[in-house]
Length: 188
Image (cartoon, rainbow, N blue to C red):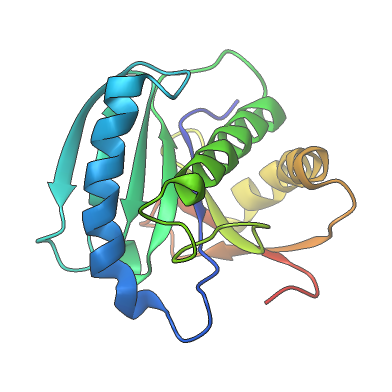
């Protein structure tokens, strides 16, 4: 059983924009995330906003919640929206991945609807994302662990995206947490 699933959705930038606009997007995220706390827009209990914009290639702006964190993350110097499930869900791998996908994509839709992001940053349809497991004991970053989780991830993606086909690729080495690149076939 896997728990603590992360999903990072990479944006679709308007023509002429790109990751160079990350700083202005991160500044806007701080404002928006404070509003999300005030308006209780997520299912999870939201607690605080942590601003890590000063950290190069770092966590960006984090909306800290009790069950999960949401962030506009600049890890790897690549901006994306990151959902990080902290509280365990007593379910199988497929449901844990599906829950994280649903939560991440719902938050992405909510973020791109905010006035600060309208026309500047979009996430859908998500052609590229990463799925990670924040538990090296349950899911080491090995070919064997990836192979055992692959069917559950594929079913969760099929349930979320319908007929869209995705390619999966394990990222990083054995000393890193398990991360899987997910790219729509025929997508960007």
